[in-house]
Length: 208
Image 1 (cartoon, helix red, strand yellow):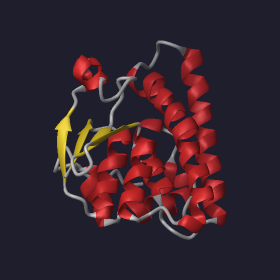
Image 2 (cartoon, rainbow, N blue to C red):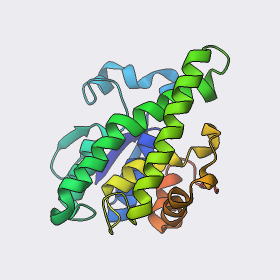
Image 3 (cartoon, helix red, strand yellow):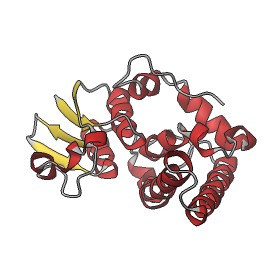
């Protein structure tokens, strides 16, 4: 049994989708980030920076924080979605998500979606960065079926949830042919549909 401490966010979706993909039984413990529950002392013991998600693997009594590390752990444990021969490429695209795609688009959410009108500089900066990321992902997916090659991997699972918020970005995902193809194909996976709705069973994946 895996216990997932999470919230209904892109980082949270990464792990619920992964757990659905590998077919592991899991229990969800909601962390209400709107009420700062992620900063409670008992949660900080699990996640030193007060971030979701976290898992506890009750089979091994191991606790893992940081979504990228959790994906790697679950991939190693299950032997799925992390091919040895492709691992160097997978790791690069996974780290690109962790270091660039998530943090930069996350800032775009803050300025453009949650706090419009408070900082013209912030809105313009992160809009431009997010638009550039769309283009960079589109360029990669023009020459590669998935981010790390011909196979769907944890690199795709890490990145896709951020594109699932495309309606917030006002950039126009449908204008990026290759990124749209990749997004739509992954959106049709049964595990992705289930993982996206892990906290709200009525949740539907945004279409193009």
